[in-house]
Amino acid sequence: MPAHDSPLSAFQAADILHSLAASIVEASLEHFYATYPDTRQKHGPKGIAKCREDCLAHIEFLVAALRTDTLPTFAQYVLWVRGLLVSRGRSDEGLIEMLEIMRLQILDQAGEAVYAVAAPPLEQVAAALRDPLASHTLYATPPAHVLMQGYLKAVLAGHYRLAQQMILDAYAGGMPVADLYLQVFEPALYEVGRLWETGQASVAQEHLVTSTTQLLLNILYSRVELPAAPGQRALVACLSGNTHQVGARMVSDILQMNGYDTFFLGADTPERDLMSMIQEVQPQVIGLSATLARHIEPVQQAIEHIRSDFAHYHPVIMVGGIAFNRVEGLWERVGADVWGTNAGQAIERLMSG
Ligand code: B12
Image 1 (spheres, helix red, strand yellow):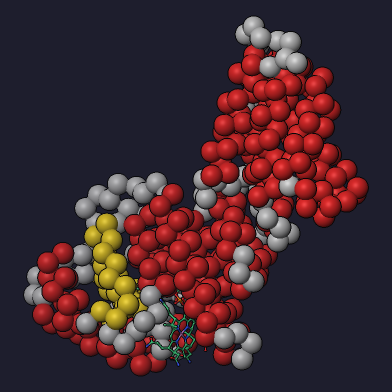
Image 2: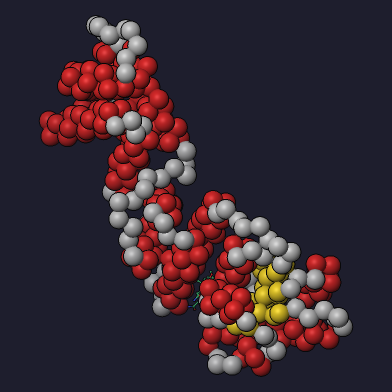
């Protein structure tokens, strides 16, 4: 029964937890297997021993977090454990359930005074496990090409959570959003395009990678602290007949991250409506995208109209997309001012010129 009921320092509580670790773990295992008898069978002696080892590690990480007054390190540790499980294709339900049982056993075995000290990191863990965006800081951020391959593999295998976690971990590990866009998502989409072209991926798989990527663009973008836009406006669009909007979206997002207020019109924009919005917004920069050869003529016509319809307004017109990347000098022939093989290069040229 609990022997310690007067207020304790974190250090004292940690010492008590450390000394009771073995009995808390045994009671937790007993509780867990009594609740899930099939799992005892499934785990067998080897699995039970592994589970005991893991539970002891949970307690020791909790003790270390209390002793060093670094409570969030415990949540980081648990997220790391979850990452290991998920990346091996295993469910994290057992981990979540076991932590809840251990919380009850700490209260029961160590008493209220210890529990009062241990509760905050345990609550942080519960909150982190409920937050679909929580991720641990990776101890080793992989190089972009490795991340790209892992990301694509995870998406194609249907492991959305793993894919999301890889991206958020890389972001938390310091990889800039623009690098994730251009060095992970863009090559992953090119690769799934290549797989489709060579009969190794279905249309549905290409759609899966595209829609997952768009979801992650939204999640990442929502985490970026956008700089104030000092009155600079940029409008980016794909014209009628062009449904490839991810590249143009990246251009728009990166412009916004560089201090522009952006108007991203997305795919399939009729030229007439583009012109009305240009008239209304008078952006300093207009970006038009072309992916297929047949997207080039509408871009050229729109540029001609922008140049001829507005007498006192001279925006910088940027073009890009793989249709321009294939033919040298095509961007100049359609009358654009700036082009780049990717969003980063184009925006660098825009800002330096
Ligand atoms: C996803 C995808 C689709 C999706 C698009 C969904 C969406 N919401 O965007 C859907 C399913 C609609 C689609 C349809 C088609 N697609 Co498609 N598609 C792709 C795929 C796999 C990825 C495109 C992508 O998002 N790339 C990633 C982005 C980030 O790269 P990006 O577009 O190049 O953009 C970068 C730069 O080019 C630049 N950039 C882009 N726009 C702009 C604009 C400005 C202003 C600037 C400065 C820079 C810039 O910056 C971006 C970031 O760095 C590509 C493969 C590939 N290689 O791109 C095929 C691909 C482009 N499609 C192809 C084809 C054939 C088609 C279809 C004709 C298929 C069909 N039979 O229906 C249709 C045509 C649709 C249409 N009318 O436009 C072929 C084109 C081949 C060719 N010879 O031209 C490709 C190359 C696939 C392949 N390998 O065969 N597609």
